[in-house]
Length: 65
Image (cartoon, rainbow, N blue to C red; front, top):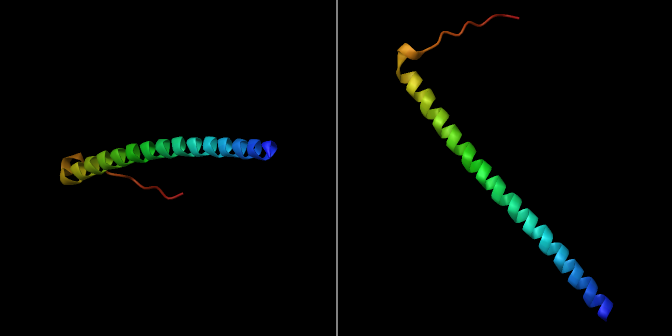
């Protein structure tokens, strides 16, 4: 019986560690997504500003390979 309890306790601690690691990774992922959304929003605002100001347009010369 002691061996079984010890085994279950060990398994519980392993699962707890896995949960904590997964939770930390989810928080990091959430932070990265939030930062990316902010950067995309800023980039979108810059592009819109350039579109509204024809003097800022850049002529792009496309060459054929």
